[in-house]
Structures are given as C-alpha cells and as structure tokens.
Image 1: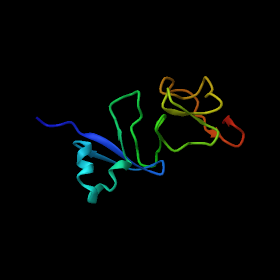
Image 2: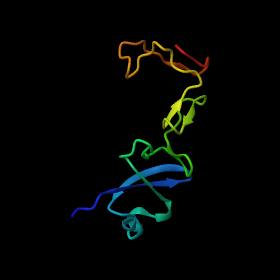
Image 3: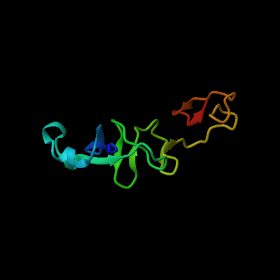
Image 4: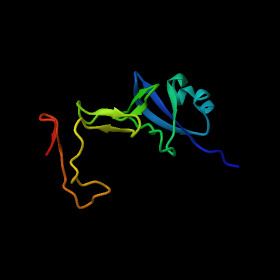
Length: 115
C-alpha cells in the first residue's frame, strides 16, 4: 500500500522559502544534509478549501497560517476568504467569475479607488 504524500513548508524568519513533498515528517528529520533544520518546517495542505496551502514567498503566522505577499499596502488579509481584500469593494458591474461580461477594473492605490 502506497502512503499519501505530505507537504511541509520551510519557514525562515516568518517567510516560506521552500515547500517539500515527503512521505512523512520523519523523513525530513532523518535527512538533515538535504533539508537542514527540521524545526523550520511546518506542515501545509493543498486539498482543503478552508486552509491555504503554502507557496514560496508566503509569510507564515501560527494563528493566521500561510499568507501570500500583499497586493497593495491598503488591502487586508481576510482569514475567512483566504484572500487579500481591498478597502473599497469592487463595483457591482465588475468582471468576475460570476459576471464574465462585466467591466474590467484596476485598483488605483494612490487614490484608493477602482478605475
């Protein structure tokens, strides 16, 4: 019987530097020449819609999980949506996955508005 792979993010100073796939955490512990300090690794998942899987470049917070680099300084991280959220919602006529014929908007960080 084949074991299911597990994913671990290497976190250095709060930043994900690498994500590895192994059969078990013990493999990281038993191979320090390849993986370095095992205490730097945090398990991550990619098959759960309630948790965001780690990617290199993400930040890691023990309470918030893995957070992608911010898009704009004014946006905030929404732990429920697992996404960056602008301070001003998209206009109702915006092009979205639910409205493919909508208007394409870009965020103007300087003026804090959609254009």
